[in-house]
Structure formats: structure tokens, C-alpha cells
Length: 244
Ligand SMILES: [Zn+2]
Image 1: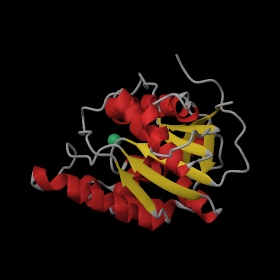
Image 2: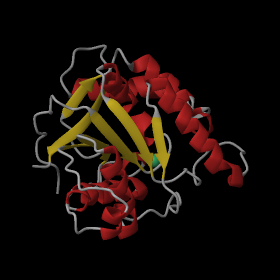
Image 3: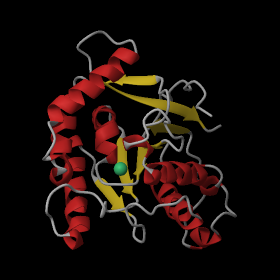
């Protein structure tokens, strides 16, 4: 099972909602793309399902990790110009499943923010590289977000309590999947690279032990090369789906 070729990208996008499992997911995969969208006048909001309480490589006491990682994600968002960052409650790092509760919570956010485009993690596993992008929480959030986009957010009879809260149905027109198999929509983010690096440096508990610049440049140069960009370019890659 894999994705179809990417759809042509919409040109009239005003709002994007990015939905990810952990603090730092959106920055590792997409901070350059997000920075470019912000520069183009698109409003981007982050919705993060957990506070990353099972992550971290330093000796931060475990009970302090959720607050620390929330703070790090908010600082990273500010670096690329994202003003709104929401965290869901009730989901623990490492235990996320594409449950009805998660679908409802993502649906509520979609109906509140009314995005034209949703950016999320791939629900499809990359079998050739089981670590990293194919973390079960990432797959679960990608699946729950896809179900929230269709049918839940557009169906007035899905999660009826949301209508009672005044959240009207909304149609998300486009999905960008990050971290999936064979991404074919390549975005040149060479110009945005310094901001991506700065955003990731804000995730101190996750990145302080890494040669972050070296790791990112190697990964993003390989993505650029696979996408046919000239040498010296840095890229992020996606599969883009139209929902209509
Ligand atoms: Zn993650």
C-alpha cells in the first residue's frame, strides 16, 4: 500500500492546521515549509496531541518533561512565525491510537480553525526505515486526522456534541502528509533553513545532544537530490492529497 502521486497544490490557501503527535515533529519535518507559508501570508496553527512526556535525552525529571516540551514547542513556533499552538489533553506519548476520542478532538480543532489545508504525519508506515517517521504515535495521528478530515469534520451528524457547542461542519480541501513512503512533492526550503535550524534548537531537551546542523543538512540535501533539485539545495518532501 502506498500513496497515489501528489495532487496539484491549491493556490488559494489562507489557513493551515498542522496536526502532529509530539512537540518537535512539525519542526523536524516541516519547519521550513511552515516558515515559507507564513512568509506568503498563510496563517498556520499547530495542534499537538501529546506533550512528549516519553521523549528527552537529558536528565530532566520525568514529571517536568511535559511542561518543558510544551514551552519548547511554543518557542519553536514563534521562531517560524506561528502564533497559535494548541495541545490536546488526555493523550500520553507512546500510547496514541486513532481512537474516536482523538478523531473528535481533531475534528473540533478543524471546525474551530477552518483550515483550507491540513499538514499531518503519514498514516502509512515506511517499511524500509521503521524508526523515526513511522513511530506508532505518528501513524495514529495521521490516521485520526485523515478520519477527522473525512468524514467527521464535514459531517454534521458526526460527533453531534460538537454541533451543540456551535462548531459547524467544515471541509478541508487538501492534506499534506509528512514522513510517509515515497514523498513526491518536494519543497525547496534552502532560504528558510536558518529558521528551521533555530526552531529545532528551541527543542533543547530533544536536540542538544545532536550535531543538529550536520544531521539536518545531510537529510534535507538528500531529499532535495531525490526530488531533482540542483546541488546545494535543501528540501522537505510530502505527499499532497486533494479531498474532493
Ligand atoms: Zn514524534
